Image (cartoon, rainbow, N blue to C red; front, side, top):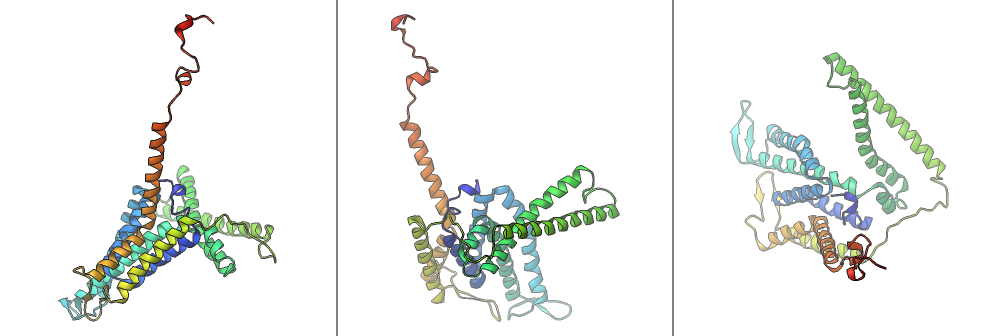
Length: 327
């Protein structure tokens, strides 16, 4: 899937930012296990649509899963709150059920954050962020957009440098241990030099374009249309239904001092909250699948309606045998 063809990326920047603010905000503060699992699954599914199975599988296998396992194990090892001890260590501290469950919840929060931010940089580009906050907080919005843009640029440049070093036999995986350290320091020095030069070039470019001058205007290609209004309505309705369920206590969760989990088994209130968050978190996926269906429908209709004239089917020559080859 080409990210440039994704329907949600083409929506208004305000819709993109509001969506990520709602999904990440709910996932960070609700901490209900079902909500966290729904958020993680939705973020992973949208990441697969934008970046593909291989990229998301590599992210999950190399970074997310090991990090989540570490967080899940570290929390009960160092925190011993809770009233349900499962076993006691040699120093007398107890491993409690509440600490284990809360560690799993924190691991899910880590996975949710990294999964959603892996797609955030593709959807909320620097020009969108500056468009939204350039007039409100011009300096801060510029710095944030440059930071978000710098990370993927740094990764791409590091890949180029490592490929160049590898081609001459100076990669960090070649040679003895002291040679590996030397090659690693060389690569690090190259990247620091590139980062400083890039910062200077960016500053000179901004100065040449008149950044900070009084009366300077900016051009934006974004406009709020009917589709954006529909998406805004979807966000308002689904988030409103979720917050209503949360405010009623249907999704209440407590990890300390005692584990209290409401919403399971599913009741009407908790079911409404789960369904509302599922519809909210999967909005980009629903929109993209609908656009794909419409495109497939139009192309299929066009294939059936368009017929090739006989003139073109014979290579531009009319096969008329009534004249027996005579004009």
